[in-house]
Length: 523
Image: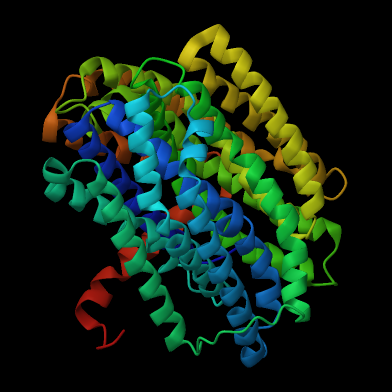
């Protein structure tokens, strides 16, 4: 990304996120093959959302963004920075342990509240799975906090591996143990993967000078500042979790298995919706923090940095959203249609995924704008704007579910993301700085996207005729060709990001023979 961080950093983080996402789909494909879209998978998706929500609200979505500005400001004195890290880790470990215990004993109430439409047997299984998965709260929470410290130190790759280990271990466990012990195998694999990632994160920080020590220094000024930033962030993320909660609540009221189909569609949305957007936010957030901390920076300079982030998000997410929209049926058939997962299940999942693809671009831009408010430490403002967006989503979800059935939930999500973009843009920029987004490079991206959509509309029907490995190869060729066409047209029409990628690619290819044959040992 020009003038932000090295392309290598964004590429490596996105590649690891994509690998973790691919393993997540392998996990879901194995679930679909072994258990289908059934009451068993309904119980699994209800149970796993509970620790995910707790970790997102308490750590990854709240404590991590609150920690980065404070911890990053203390890196000039590493001893002071590590003291702050130990205090935050001690408090987090204690609170996450308490949260895991509460979830274990309150599993019955949580499942009943989250999925009131489940029958008695499915609810009992969901309660058992929730209790088994309660330790994920502690393991995933501490791993996310250690990853925040690594990001502040400039290390992005190891924290991005968390989904690789969790999803990879779950995939192997389902294949090896699923037919023997049932769907419990998936949670056992997730627990093993999360424990391994936590150990690796701790070992990496130990090599960089961190020495773990238990300390409850709550009166430390930096701890109190982190807490001040954390409280509105936690409330903001809790509001954002209304999306999966409302989906589980309303989805459980439809026919058995429909909730699982919606969960599978959301997994498809996460490939273009999270791999690029979240990777961009990880790289961009420390840069925005530094930009805001420099007193010499004028509002115009801040607007320029945030504008480039928005335009980069639009440039990176648009082609993926288009490709997945036109190839949703083929991708669903390739990933999920096997074993107990029927052709009808695949068709319904693809239709839901297509609707969700409409939210990919606005969701990516909204994530950049949200990080802009967080970097300026406007946590209360972000909370208020998030409350308005959440209220719109909840109202739209209940109305659309009655009017359009299961397909109404993705439509409500799309509407909320578009509304959030317009709302957050008004406050994330200084003055009317958001107008700078609409320049020539934005138009070049849009024109390249329209051209790509036409090409995909003409070529996607041919891909539908293939199966198995041939289908995988056809999709790979289609994706690679679409990326080259889109990037080439965008560069031709003047998009700076596309030109930067082409120039970097040419430089890598030009230096490849020299590096291959003449690189010194250790290079």
